Picture 1 (cartoon, rainbow, N blue to C red):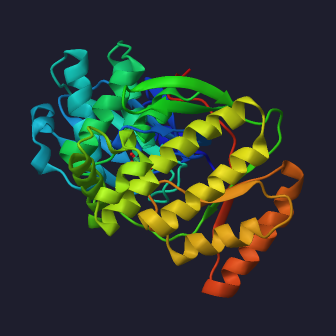
Picture 2 (cartoon, protein in one colour; picture 1 turned 120 degrees about the horizontal axis):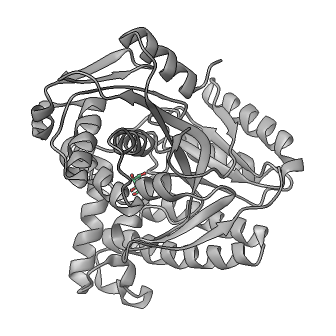
Length: 381
Ligand code: GLA
């Protein structure tokens, strides 16, 4: 099968009858730990995976022409129309927002160009296909205009496109890791100050140590649940007199209603677990990291309530397999993917077992892939 770069290049040639001038890539991600706390000013520990979204393009003509090669769909408009957030829906809203804000960041008036996008990040699987799409598009457009934007500026303008055009009230994690990941490392991010605390080395060598299991249950975060959790966190923080819920103390949560207390307990304890996980990584304590990942999943399942039967089945099956360090859901939840962290030698058996138990329970297959820590967005030379 061809990869995203080949598909995008071939589709560009077919659509426009010439070669593209520039290409850019940005990766999907898993989150090792630190879930649902980026929008509460917490610490998160995502890792870019070796699955990319690739955008290729050239500056030609008067119109904006963007082709999503995997979907066989076009976005066509006049450059001036990009500023109208209400004109666009679905993937076109993401694209239009990112393009409008990238021109703004470059202090350039929107102009015509041709772009083709293809992606190897599974869509809507909780592996941050949207951020990979956004960041690859920004990187390409800046490249086409001969500009280089600061990575944080890229992350922020892409998040703004999600908020204002796609109407998804996401945090900064996905865009930040897509823009700034370092190969072979996970990244510890402080979402309160918006800075990279450090790049944490993953187990070295070619050892596969991360299995991604896709439940193939799809969930769109523009739907109610994600926004409802975020609103509950903000309300709980206000009730406690804190700017961010992560700053609250566990001992003070009794003042909250039962529902908010559970939500706050997840947020506060998840932030602590993430900091402990970074320490474990520094010490090369992989089983310690795995234990924290397990606790994270349990907290998301029981207190934050964003897991589902399919994710729990994968996690339980993985944890029962010999040699597993830890397993948890990753990303927004309500479906999508779980990750299993274990020594490479144990992986084939774990994969077999998880696949078998998933099929026995749901009478269909889950998807699996091994993930390696990859680098953040860049132009492809
Ligand atoms: C989605 C959002 C992120 C983050 C995660 C949950 O991926 O885009 O900002 O909130 O969910 O950790």
